[in-house]
Length: 86
Image (cartoon, rainbow, N blue to C red; front, side, top):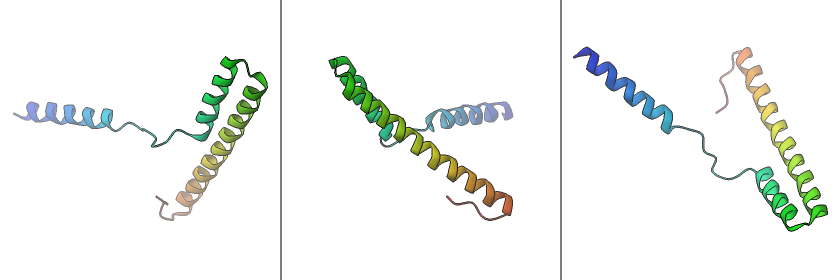
């Protein structure tokens, strides 16, 4: 009986873990710019593609900086014993 309960818990835990994957609500800005750049490159518009790739890299860098700043602030708050920001 106890073995049956453990296996049920294990199965449901795996289902929850697998089903709880990260799925963004919207595509990041840099992803849209990259897709547009790839389309321009396929059409032979290389100067437009170059500009779009640069825009995508700038958006990616900005997003990464925001993420790193947020992570750093959370780490500092945790070390100071403050309650974490959701």
